[in-house]
Length: 157
Image 1 (cartoon, rainbow, N blue to C red):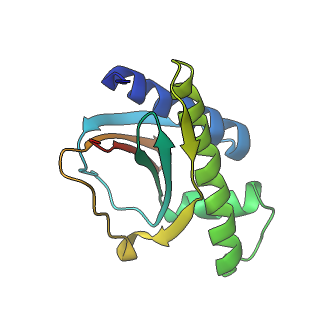
Image 2: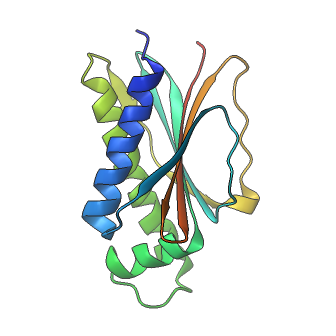
């Protein structure tokens, strides 16, 4: 089953605005939509979740350092930013919620999609290898000086 480009961007936008406003009290503004892998900004953390079913792919969540620190304080109630494990656990949960909302939104059209487990890594350590012929949909958002980006990558097979 084919998903339209507009439908994917709409699902990304809806999920991010809902999750970041509801859980982190951040009113995100959409900055750009790009069909491709290019990110205009550098990010600090990357969360990744794969999915399979009627189509296969991954959802990637990129956040600037300040967004992650705000998440620790507001979402998890953690005061010390040196708590590496809590950062990873919290960012995994945030990635899980954002990806889950995107996939649930896309499933409303009758798709069956099964979400995998989240993985978190630092942006500098992140290496993405995708199948040739895959389609990538990237949306970048801002909140004050902070940045968030989401990519949905649909594999060709």
